[in-house]
Image (cartoon, rainbow, N blue to C red; front, side):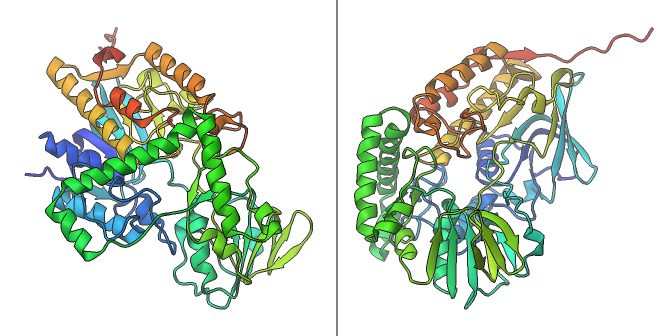
Length: 497
């Protein structure tokens, strides 16, 4: 029997009902742990796959690997689109009976560790307070859209929006549409916008590396065969994983292999873009992989259209009827779309977190997040992060990382239960050792080769990406190491004189 969501005390409180939160919830049930609640600020599950509904939204990791190994799916095509991925998450919630355990509209704004009981007080925006022994943040890294503070933006007479808040009520047919940004989202929605707009003007700050996306729909016979012989799905997962690791080899270890990948990209780009001037505009000024590598078969083809204009000057000002670039050029527009990414550097900035001794997480992370394996931070007992700092990938599937993180959390719960401990906290020296390793290892990667990207801070510190092979992460995360943690016991209040 599911405990009512009105309960104020839980063994585990999960923040976020995206891939991480739902995956942990499912595995908690598999482990026989039922006293948990999933707190979701939105009005539906799905996280980024709920929010990003722009035309062409799809995954850039082949779907057999972009799904949990414990909940396999038969996908309609090699790279699933947003509707299929959201439907997968709904099926996961259905199959595990998670819906009664999810509280929608539960926006967590405070976390306070109570040292006398070794529990967390979880404060919601509504004013309600819950209590949980363990809190797991699964809010992700791509949740808050970033719109540049351009002068005059409020004066624009037409509709404007961020790609993660797509205006489906605006008909773009026949309009002059401006797109600011050429990141992963823009690469997908610009080709779709160009099909209907009278003119599409793309404002590019820096050219991305765009490589082919080997996508296609599966034939009915293939789908039937995968259903009959599930091992074929596992073999495809292994194939996709090895391909991702081969790309990762260039990003984290071998500059020689990265040079080969760059040569292959250049050959393909030149075959797609015959015009020398456009080719120059499409050539990045950074090392391949320093910024996110993008996948598309349509990007370069779209830029060749007569009704598409690529502007390599930054937007300096928004006018009522368009924009003005840094050179003073005015461009008339009817609609303006921002494909400018997300606020990624301030992890958990929307939640005020106070740990042991009143220590604030924002202060502990003032110079950048400090964790062990991206999972736990010293001074904050029984607080874990899924898809936390330094666990993002420049290649391969984040779900592969999430499965290791989920196993780590389950291991912590089992360890506390077996030893009769109320709380565990990662040791400061373990955290320091891990961060020193990340810093040293990151110097060898493409991400710290000199460009500015959301992977790094303004000072060039890698705070997002795992700087090595993913199987090495899983070797550490899968097995919970009690020696990396120390027990935290309830603090006895001082006697009143």
